[in-house]
Amino acid sequence: MITVMGAGAFGTALAVSLSRDCPILLWAHDPRHVEELRRTRENERRLPGVPLSENITFSAEVEPKTDQDIVLLAVPMQRLRGVLEQHREALAQARLVACCKGMELSTGLGPVQIIHEVCPGSRPAILTGPSFASDIAKGLPTALTLACAHEAEGETLQKALTTANLRLYRTTDTIGAELGGALKNVMAIGAGVVMGAALGDSARAALMTRGFAEMTRMAVAVGAEPETLSGLSGFGDLVLTCTSEQSRNYRFGLSMGRNETFDSSVTVEGAATAQAVQSRAQALGLDMPITAAITRLIAGELRVDQAMDMLLSRPLKEE
Image (cartoon, rainbow, N blue to C red; front, side, top):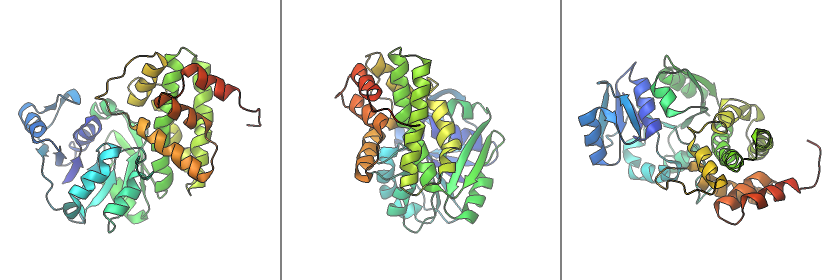
């Protein structure tokens, strides 16, 4: 059985897709939510309108796992460490696959690195790339990156997690896959700001292009392969989240650009990640002006017009 930890929209969508081929246990931290799922066979809180098959069972408990068990960690990035620490003993032997994107605010670490720290005996992987929960749940075709440093383990996970509508591409570059998923969230906020402030499609294209250059710059500086950033986990995810209002990060940016209040109950991974990325960039001595501007916008230290003036007045240079 595959366990999906996290009954948000993405975790539920993965459970729906995978349940077409095998039994799935969907874990939620709130027992009341578990009871709702059992009673309604639908995740009315996070993914309404999608029926949950009888192949999916629900629990608020985590039973001890063996080295044959696959656990997908679809919890918010900033909660990942806490969930792992709480269930460390039960998860110690499992095959752990992170399904969250971002950097931990307190440490600047990505999800695979956090799994290494909390469960040092594991061989963690990350599943990432351009994907919206609603598309996966509807059975629409989606391609993702599965990154695992151990090649044989990656092959096993790739076979187990590929479904009729989920095509997985494999890599051993976990650093690049982590950073692509984290950094694109920051750029998606920026793209939302641009469109919310009515600065135009041309400005959004410029931000995406120069933002991708920043993403690649940081990734290569910490040991990632540039090819990984050009793939699904980097460029592919960047295109999706910078151009669709299904992206929470993009919608968050839209609200800032329009000077509107955003729903605080919606998780926006890029907001915390921007601060973590900016801190790491400064520590590495990297020039990441778009990231810096977005971080200051989120913190309320800049207005949109000030951020644009700051970026447009930078010294001219070669591309």
